[in-house]
Image (cartoon, rainbow, N blue to C red; front, top):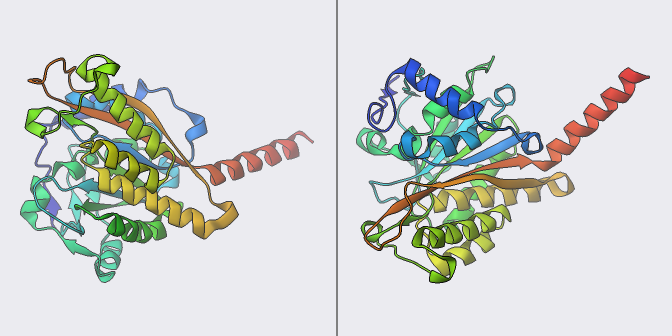
Length: 317
């Protein structure tokens, strides 16, 4: 079994385990937990250098419950290779400064057998940061886990709307299992000449305020859990959300699983934090936006609440 080296450690985040653990602990403890978002089933988290997005990412990872999770799917965009489908890692583990994370070989075989997923080359895997940047946070958030768990890193390519639905159906089968958790790796607006995106509406104030307005409209569309609403938004703004296809796959997965569950199906998604790498005030400036969201299983939350109430009634009688 080979292990993917943490190729961005020491530059995008600390390669010192003790130092990194302390930093992640500080960010996670600074986030007030939202019990109404539990049990969580998925998060959307940024993947930039931790000095830029670590505090925002913590809002997502604060809501993982290690006791419930046995497998974590990590869906991230491809920044270096053109891909029209999806690809898995060929490694058996991902290294992090906090310890290695074991890749789920059985699920990888299932994905390849579906005919929809190929394997990344070692070079493609090593270059891609969207998957790697989630791993230290996963390792930290799962530290209290008393059972074995695995990861399923999945690089998501430039999918057509039709393919987003196809991959959503594929992922929906796994979302149906409450022991599976999903991390959608995505930054939001990449603004500036170097990103070839200069949308600006002066009605919203400074450039950075206009950027936030566009991002928040996208966040609102995602919160509807409607892929159609999200596509309508993207058709209007063409926002440079790098993980836009992975987000759409999640929306379709939710729809497929909710439909399969019928009346018992029900999810709710909420964004908890938003930030920008810098505040643009000139067309010569650039910035990247970051957002953190949590998807909860509303039906499971109601069930858990009912069980808790029954237990309370029983013990008080």
